[in-house]
Amino acid sequence: ENIQKQVNFEDIYLATMYERNIESYNVSMKDALSGEHKDLCIEAIRSELLNMIKYKVFEPVMNSSGNKVLPSKTFLKEKFRDDKFWKWKARLVCGGHRQFAVDEETSSPTIHNHSVMLIAGMATYEKTNLNTADVPAAYLNAYIDSPTYMMLGSEESKVLCELDEIYIKYLQSNGTLILKVVKALYGLKQSAFAWYKYCLLYTSPSPRDGLL
Image (cartoon, rainbow, N blue to C red):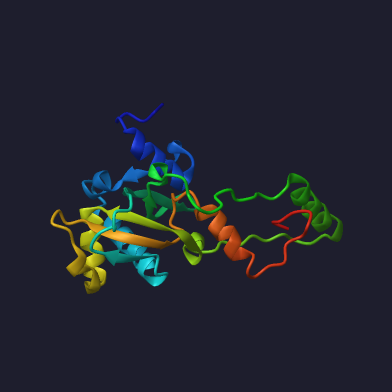
């Protein structure tokens, strides 16, 4: 309610695919690049696209072979450490709300509440500490099964071509790129389950709780 500027529905949806909460104040790439932190934002976008290259998230194509092409958006957000500005973080999100029926599972399980309480109780009883860990670019480790095509905006395409010249010959007349997505990119309906399925390759889940 404190947001003064009007945001269209698609921007809201794609932003919430990243943070799940519009009050996290995600900034569109257009607004970020017109602000005073333009250079920092460009570096954040470069870092995000370098991750895409590193994890081989997509591959360029001349056309989608008649398949539906999904939109994409890049959002940026200020990150803080100890209440002080740390850096700008960019996230490329695919428009999964435009997907039709997906030929693979899309529902990812969550851990049961009693499992969380059991672990906390055991730690308290044994007087041990519980630690958490973050997996960088977690979803990007997992492959998806359904053929998925996405259009990358002209600004992102320009940066991507600077990072890897292989994309230059695939540029469309309007400066965009059509990409075949092969990894679980943020925003796709099947990405959460693809990540869960990837985790199962390295774990032996409990029959009572698939995430324990």
